[in-house]
Image (tube, rainbow, N blue to C red):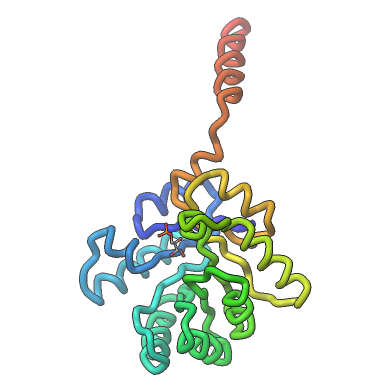
Length: 217
Ligand code: E4P
């Protein structure tokens, strides 16, 4: 399973990249706004800055909702950097636009996916990634990880090539569960990635080893 970081914060992206475990980045308009980036040029520069840090795909989301403007915006975003993947919402014009992007060699990430039916449409449109929103599904009293399992089973039976990108991750446990459920990619906040490091027996064991090492130093 690939690890993406789900942020537009450059310091956090650098920190994850420097650990050597980062395969890409996802952003969305809310994450960009959180960084205080204002204006089209500043947003574009920020995407390029992110692309210059990481080695893998960087999702940049369109904010248009009609076919013509999604195409115009997506074409422009994809030209900013070769690592850019155009993130398109799961709406009717979005599906039509993803098929157009697929036919024209532009990679897409289908976002705001909450059902298996939507994931089938994303695959049919040739999306490179489909992003089921695990945490938001859990927040609504459903089970996000079960959706990943269901999509994984359908894609495997049908031979769909779209990669399952588990998004809206809220915890380290979500990452482990998504790996078990067959996610190809997990996009996570930095805290959830760092949480995977933690185990008290590791800390206790290391303290003991370092103490004993003093005996023969
Ligand atoms: C990433 O592609 C999604 O936009 C993001 O994971 C959504 O996360 P949230 O539900 O925490 O806003």
